[in-house]
Each structure stands twice: as C-alpha cells, then as structure tokens.
Image 1 (spheres, rainbow, N blue to C red):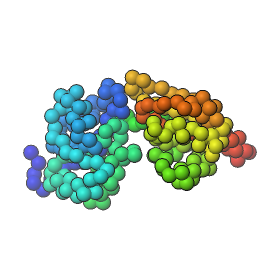
Image 2 (cartoon, rainbow, N blue to C red):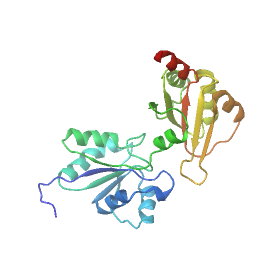
Image 3 (cartoon, rainbow, N blue to C red):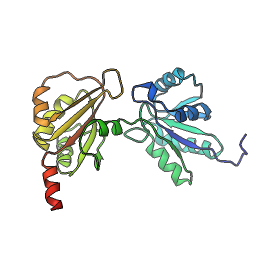
Image 4 (cartoon, helix red, strand yellow):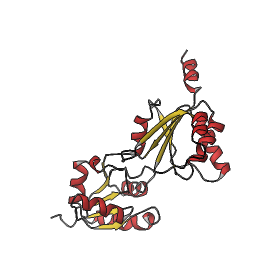
Length: 240
C-alpha cells in the first residue's frame, strides 16, 4: 500500500499496431498492475485486454477530451494512483493522444515512464528501404488543396526522407500530387497494413506509382515515405 502522500506513476504504453504477438512483456505487466488505464477507445482496448486476460479498469481519454480530463488524471496520480495511457495502436503521442498529458505531467514535476514498443513510423522507416540516417515525420497531410500543396512542397524542400500517414480515401489523390509537386522521379515507399495479415510494401518512383495505381481502390492504414531523387546528388555535391 502507498502512503497517502506518495505520488503514483504515469505510464505511456505502446500497444501492437496489428499483430498481437508484438505486445511486450513489460507492457503487459504494466497494464496488469496499474490502477487505471486511460484509453483512446475503450472498446478497442478492452478487446486487447481481454485477449491477454487483463481486467484493469478503463476510462476514455482521447483527442476530444484529453485537455478536460488531463488535470483530473494528474491529480489522481499525485494522490497515489498508477495510470497507464494507451492509444488504439502504436506509441502514444505519435499522431495519437498522449503528448498533452505527458507535457502537463512534466510541468507538474512528475517523471512519466515510457514503455516502448511498436510504432508504425519506425516500422515504415525500416521497411521503406529509403535513407533514414536522418528523416522527418509530418503526420497527416491537410485536406484542403492549398495547404496540401504547401505540405508536399515542404517535402520537396526537406533535404531528407519524409514519412507521413495517409487515409485510404486519399491515397489515389496523394500519389499524383507527389509526382507533380515533389517530382516524378522521387522515390516513394507505401507501407500498407504494417504487421497485419495483408501487410504490403510498395516501392517505386512517384510518377510510376501514380500511373500504375490510377483509379485503384485502396484499403487499410498507410505510412508513406518520400525521398526526392535529386537529394543524393545534391548531398554529394555539398560534401565535396
């Protein structure tokens, strides 16, 4: 039992992005032992917990209520409660809820514990076969056309490989945009359904992929990696 003045712990726990066998022993132990799990979607997380026979109490903590709920959660932790925060899949804070809670905990003088694990971003960085000695991550592209173009112009000018998430409803639009704005010879890797049954990695030039998949009906979850074709020559010239 904790003393009444002993602070609890906040854990940010990574969960599988598809294959449940990617769940780490450490993550399982934390989810079993904490007093409360703050989940992006309690229905989704309940399925995960049920698979591993974990019965810890769940509450909802997602992008639309995290600012409102964070203060109360941190008060509970300050009062001695141990809390684990999880997103639907992958690592909290990486285009998922978690950052705000983490920041506010640190501002209160707490030291959250990060339980590492699977991330769609790190999976894609390895699977893409693109240069990743340095790279950028830009989350999801904007929906409106003007802002989307600026997004892709930023990729063209980044000077390194860039990864971003994309919706299956917009992939067919994204590939021609990459070919037009970043350039038809840009190297592109499409990572679809990482770790899942229909996992697929498609690699090629932006122009070639835009032509090959014109009108294609995409399904699944996607990470796209882009490396502008002239960057390598440019970097070699800079080193001379």
